[in-house]
Amino acid sequence: MAEQATIGGSDGNRLISLGNISGVFGVKGWVKVHSFTDPRDKIVKYGTWQIKHQGKWREVEIADGKRQGKTIVAKIVGLDDRDEALLYQGDEIAIHPKQLDKLQQGEYYWHQLTGLNVVTTEGVELGKVHHLLETGANDVLVVRGDRERLIPFTIGHAITEVDLSMEQITVDWDPEF
Image (cartoon, rainbow, N blue to C red; front, side):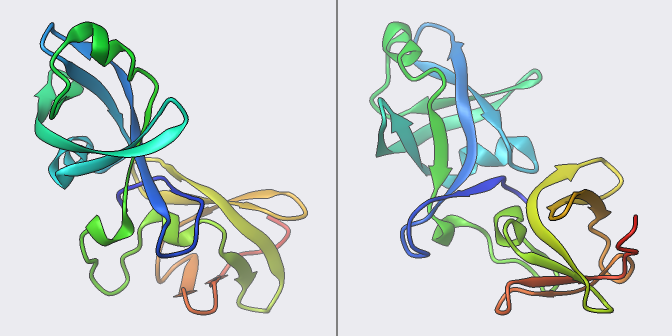
């Protein structure tokens, strides 16, 4: 799972949020990037980004990018000045879904799971996936319904089935827990 959220629009026009520009690096227009991808430096491998700059989405081309210590830095084509780069601080970075890598059977991107209905194997509705958490051991579904539940995303254990066409995740989970 490599990204965080889906941003508006119909399926063909949706964007996948990958992070944001968190600052500048050096004097030649490089930007620091807060990345949601796994691994974090994968964000610079997409070639083009959609950036929400001054309230409008625009496409930019990535000339270069790399890890710089604990930070990810990127060079956007045409952005050659530190002062101009400062204007992009806080801008959201997204890509089109078609840019995502194809996944193996049983693998899912977070944006595919967010919003799905969650039901127990006995048919008790628990709510919808609000978001996911990365814990190190495994990802965790944050399910909101009559209350909030944290369910480990462990296929074959807590997760018995993910049906994207039915927009449903079936879980082996006690509704009282």
